[in-house]
Length: 303
Image (cartoon, rainbow, N blue to C red; front, top):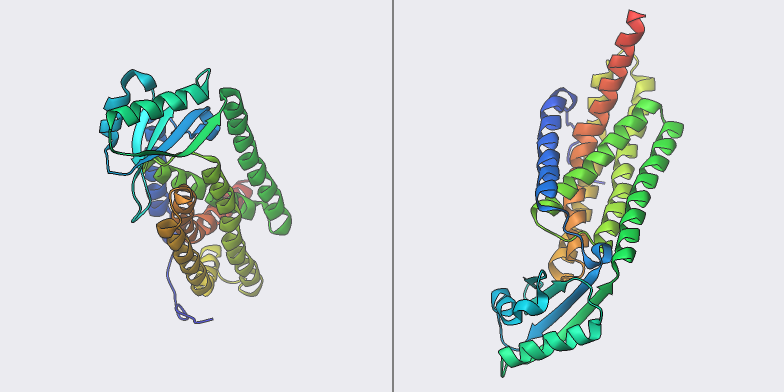
């Protein structure tokens, strides 16, 4: 493997408070926006009906919204579409008593309002509100359970302070990525949930590689301070981390560009998550271990 950072000697740990500040600002901004706007749940989680239509001639979402009027009262109309693809119109509404009749009514209304412009129904997704709530609960339980199991695993393999550092870095990655999902107004769908769970596994892998090197160096470099051991270990694994992150990023970027609308949310989460993971491995996980260990040492001296 090429050693792009063979003689690297960067002082990562000493900048930990600056990087923590940056991460905190991003996460808080995302949470505030989510509270103000509300989560953009997909039909998978909120329940309702999503109907995607395509016109033979281009129309705007505003024209469709005006054409449908009271038919979708309280609903939403927006344009979607992949790079280089003809734009589709997403019509979103609450579940009706007769979804088939509602679909036919919308299609007939659009045909009448746009004569000579053929309307094609591309996709219909229908989920009841109870199922949506159950899926939201299952998603939350899955994420929490994954984090708990990883905490147990890292504590067993390394030490508790390493587990704390790894889990904080992992939670950091999830919330930073979630913040950008909110900023870009992507739907929180089942595919996005799958991307977050994938990100959890990917993120912890990079962190464990660095932790392995730290553990080795702590045995060999007993006269060196913990912060210096952390910096040296991160520098020694920097080449591997960068190459891995760039490879995954480029693969995901291709998926984002050419994967179409169905995979857009999944690939966006992975794109942001790969960057957040590389950042957290260097600037979050190891510095947290240093802070935890130094406070434990000071507490022991006071006793």
